[in-house]
Length: 215
Ligand SMILES: [Zn+2]
Ligand SMILES: [Zn+2]
Image 1: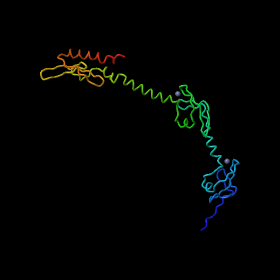
Image 2: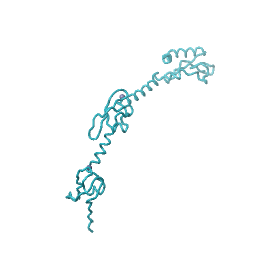
Image 3: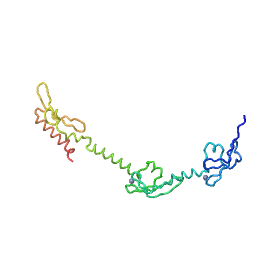
Image 4: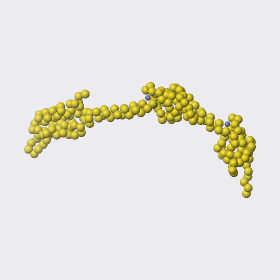
């Protein structure tokens, strides 16, 4: 069964109007077309019927030019304000921007439009710096939890004196003094009287905590 030979002469495909069939390239049939823009172009029949080719190429060029020529002057992207167009090549447009920090940089249009570039780089640096400062503030006291040093005496404290607890033996009741420093409990000893234990604790406070509590 012979394949019916189609003829698209005189038909329109997008911006192209088919003028006449020309020499095929191998087995591929080709047509000479005239574009609305005035250019003539030889197009494969397949590309015409599949809608692959709808202009001499002027349509694609226009689209590319459109997107690269969106005027970004005066627009703001994060920290950046677009000052003017810096350059343009291969359908990519580069814009000169001024950052909030005063620095000026050149950024490609699409990086601004898709939000990839929001500052000269100072924003990221600042973020990192802020985080580092917070961390430092947290650990500034060398791992000593200052809030816990200033905390009121625990209600469950058996003696009413911070850092002094009852130390019961079979024979008697003694007093154990302790101090917490850098997440470690330091044993200051067991004393016969609460006064001695309190004194030991006070001396230890002077020794270990004072430098941390005085700002
Ligand atoms: Zn054209
Ligand atoms: Zn900046």
